Image 1 (cartoon, one colour):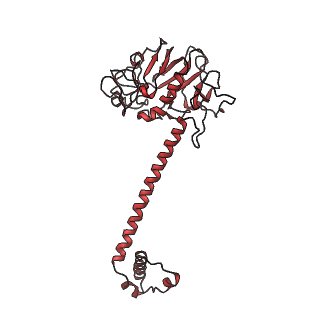
Image 2 (image 1 turned 90 degrees about the vertical axis):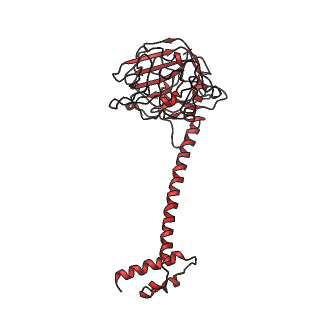
Image 3 (image 1 turned 180 degrees about the vertical axis):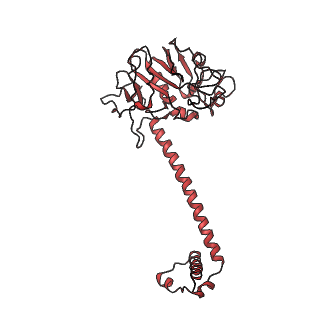
Length: 343
């Protein structure tokens, strides 16, 4: 019997075996002859059934892959939610971010946002009580509790700039984190404290209503020119107020007072527009912020544009009115930090 005939016979027999509902024991298998007589013992429909089974298995495997992907996405969401309520995410312990800062309180170091300046994690502050803020804490990741009815959570404390005690609430320097996000992401926060991140509007609200806070904005353009804007009061509302920018104090610094027209405005994202003009500024500028009636103002959470990229038009970059106005271009680095004024 030729090899081709043997192969045809084996395929036909396998098709017959997979198309029956009865279990075959070893003795029955031995009794099946592998010769020319086997070819006519199974209808050709068995081969069709065998093919259908293979197709069904392939479909099932594709469905399982989709389910696994969905479960992985849910796990990421659960980790993010755990972080938002103060729990330590699974397999993600905080790593302190150490940067080369200028010790001078009057200037900004060009390396303050350098990702190469990562250092090993510093342990969370231990003791009978959890600190309310970053004042007199270690430089790096620290666990704080702004109020008695708030679950503790981790923040990054900056002790190297302008006397220290700052809680970093937003950090951008290389475009590794996408800031064009939905409402829920801005509510709970996103990104790692060791890289680019946003602390989350809930946490920012809890922090800024717990004491009299000031806001520091540090800016760098592509030519490494540095500016800063300091506001002696800063506070936002809760989610029921759409995180309204309730308090914005007096301005000092060599960067323009670019937040003034955003004061009193509600926070907007592409899926929750709270701008007064009716135009969805978050969608128009591919970002999120306390937008005013005009979309063409400051846009700190806009699209990060690397130096070699073609400039994005339409006021979509990282903009600060009076330092980089747009409509084209983007700042290279921006960091927002808050600190109790008494510090």
